[in-house]
Amino acid sequence: MFKLRLFKTEDTARVLQLANAYAAFDMSFDEADLSITRSFPNGFWIAEEDDRVVGVAYGYFRDVPPEVLERWEASKAGYVALMAVDESYRRRGIGGALLKRLLEEFRKAGADVVTVHCPAEAIEAKKLYDKLGFEVGAYHMKRRL
Image 1 (cartoon, helix red, strand yellow):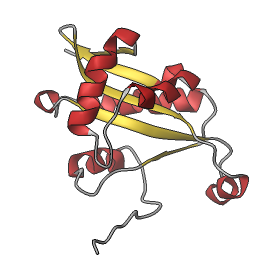
Image 2 (tube, one colour; image 1 turned 30 degrees about the vertical axis):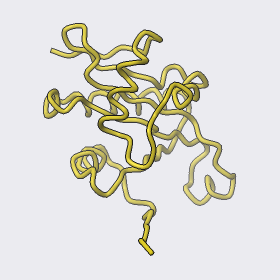
Image 3 (cartoon, helix red, strand yellow; image 1 turned 180 degrees about the vertical axis):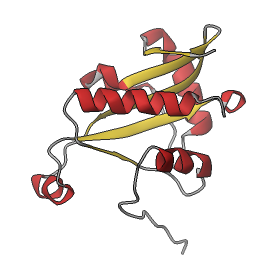
Image 4 (cartoon, one colour; image 1 turned 90 degrees about the vertical axis):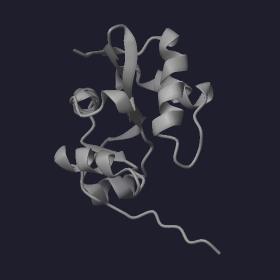
């Protein structure tokens, strides 16, 4: 059975391994990408099973222009920056548990809206976001020339 806990610096190598294997769609992750989490340490969660890091979710607060927050009818916006679960540990509720915990931490810290970017090919991730009440707010599109 898995357990959730806050990130520790000794998790860095495994977190980067998971991020680059399962969440690096437009870029790869490195230690510098994790530095943003220092601004919201309660937004960096690890799923662990048998002393092995099998999932990760982290988020932080975004600087959103006041007029956008007004349009969203919100005052403070969180952003899910990384969500990854080792493929061999999926379909056990780990991703849902991580995301719910992260959303709860955002709520406790005053967020009233949370955003996430989800690549079109991440069909299972999209299903999880749908299940937890996320709605499409925009489309990020590309075209080859």
